[in-house]
Length: 369
Image 1 (cartoon, rainbow, N blue to C red):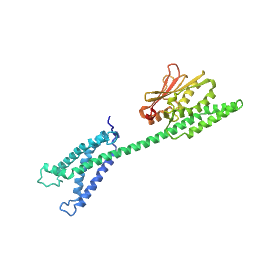
Image 2: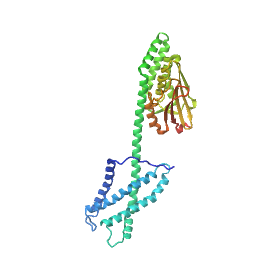
Image 3: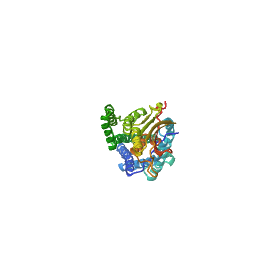
């Protein structure tokens, strides 16, 4: 399959103005150069004559340039097929050069600005034009192709910068979301109340809870700026949160981790699981009187890594928006920014009761061994 350069941006007044200036500049430059060069010679013409003549030249190139750009989009001189595409450009460039020269000869004869002797036939005028200007026309084609590639790479760099900024913003949002979940009044007050009760019963256990809470907050704030981390590191971070929740709910909460060891080194978005688990506990375990079971699992399915968080709670009420829930909107946006259409987040009821959130992300090539 051939690599293509896409350009779906709409035509705007700003783009039209830039296009006009890009044609006006060489028109003024070459008109002035020709006027100064031939000043005092037998071929001396007024500056306005040269301006009109160069305007005609660059107007023709302005008319054919969209076709040059369209061909360049289809056959860019980049990627794995750059050499083959370059060979395509050689004859096509010659055709574009020949076409523009022929158009100019015809237009200059029709408008009376031709420099060729009046007694020359049209065929002789074409031969003269090709002899004098064919190499220059080929060079203009090459400059147009090069300029298009330079502009495309500049846009790509800007898009990468914007994407990096959006990812960084989403990571900060995820970090703040995780911190907000951990500082949620019910969670914080219940944790502090649990620690207070343990102080009179089991001081070492109370100290462990204090250490876990402080470590959880510290790791949230001090986590790396990188967008991805290993499955093992993500689970290790999650364990601190889960230990506090286990102590809070006692026998009412059971956590089942089903993470095969061969998946531990795979990369996942940082802080991707904690908001999903928080959502499952809040709307699953905390919403029912019976014991809650939260299952956190991972599996590889072809070239995808599936992360699931399931609960045995009341499930999602009929007619409720499945995209609702703490952290889900930000999680969806982060997945979109990191992986595009290759990643998904779904939330659905389980046939046996409860709900499941499933995150599907592509497995990077270096992780497949």
